[in-house]
Amino acid sequence: MDIQHISRRNFLKALGLGSAAVATPAIVGCADGNKSHASGEPPVGKMTYRTNPKTGEKVSILGYGMMRLPTLESQGSAREDGDAEIDQEMVNRQVDYAIEHGVNYFDTSPAYCKGRSERCTGIALARHKREEFFIATKLSNFNPETWSRQAGIDMFQNSLKELQVDYVDYLLLHGIGMGEDGMEAYRARYENNGLLDYLLEQREKGVIRNLGFSYHGDVAVYDYLLRQQDEGKIKWDFVQIELNYLDWHHAKEINDRNTNADYLYAELEKRGIPAVIMEPLLGGRLAKLPDALANKLLRRDPEHSVASWAFRYAGTPQGVLTVLSGMTFMEHLKENLCTFSPLVPCTEEEQRFLEAIATELVSYETIPCNDCKYCMPCPYGIDIPAVFVHYNKCLTEGHAPREMQAPDYWEARRAFLVGYDRSVPKLRQADHCIGCGQCEPHCPQRIRIPKELHRISDYVEHLRRNDLDKVAPAEGRRSRRRLHIRGLNR
Image (cartoon, rainbow, N blue to C red; front, side, top):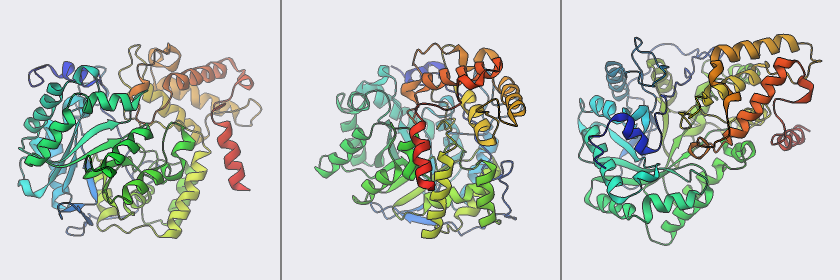
């Protein structure tokens, strides 16, 4: 496969992601109802840094995630073909501003922004001295067609070319544990083909300065890779995990296929492996909390945003090297710079407070979708993330009625149905799912996507027929959780 000369669409097909749409993030700290009260520009020279124990280099605690880049307004970000043009000038401005304010860790992937992220990141960073930044990218060989050694080598060499560098500071095996059989996929992607041996050779040569992996899914694969280090077969320089105050104790409770972050972090801490944190906001969900929970945070600290609590929590553990944030807009960047310049770690009492918030949030029974769009495109045209986003929004705002006898039933019913038709075109709604399952292996949150789409479709149909008492918006898999929450509240 000549990966340097194939078309962008075929390149993405080779990655196994199709033409996954650019993720559109929530405004961090500026969302309706969650406004920041901080004023003024973020300070220069106040960034908090953590030390890489291998190299002794100082890494900014705020890492710039290049997964969600700004697009030109003339193109928009929701074109059907997913080819909205990235605003390179704005990317340059934001990267310049980030570096000026102390950010030096930039995270990208061949799969991000439909294959454009590495090139745009490379253009922006090439305007700066190489010693001013650390760049992290990934081997995103998800598709079985890319599981040969040569295909993996070509992908890595193409990353160097796109990023305009002759070495990468941090290289990750991307999405370890994803799929129905995470161990089989890992071995096919990296071990059986000798690709991991190649990457280790590149580390010895200095072309890769730090080698690690990002984990999603099957915890058996996570444990296996760490045992490889225990047995002296390989040393991991860092590991990227999902960590936030909801996932710390509740990830498995929300989805029994996931693993709680307290376990993931503890396994790294006892081995002295630095942790890179992804999803500190869970795709923006922890920046757009239900009003009742957001108000609790704002009453506790009216000077800072709801999002800042989540970022402070993610950066508090001393084994955390950097916390990634996909900062699409300058507002994102400034807000986060204020939080981390300097970082004020959460106290033990504040961590208990956030755990109480997390316990309440679990009771809202939302679908744990981060709007990453890895599940897209659906071969039948369903806008899977949009369906889940609308459903979750209605649940948290009280617009997903459970019974017709409720005093606000008609108002909530109208809000749900009208909002559904406005936010998701009818031909892209959940009722068009045939259960093919193509989406499910790509979901980092391991959501049983067809099952959830069918449940939402059933709920919507009963809402439209006004016989809601025959179905509830969340049933079966959530009943145990409701019992658990009631037990905690006693």
